[in-house]
Image (cartoon, rainbow, N blue to C red):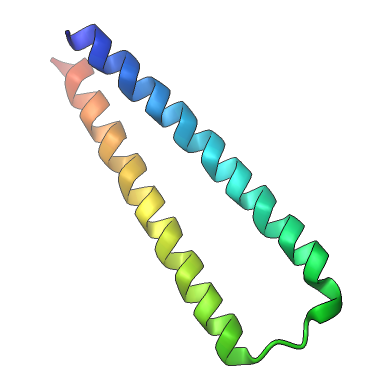
Length: 76
């Protein structure tokens, strides 16, 4: 059972890392596409930045939770 859970956590971590890479690529692709429409309000940019920061924090917290769970299983 412990081995199965460890494998599940490794798969989740790999998917998480892949998702982070894709989200970074998505951000730069959208930025490139919108380069001609860069006259956005600073409020709009601030809102987007805060939203992105919150999403990244949630992603990091979830990643850290999974790493801690996996490390506690390996340590025992």
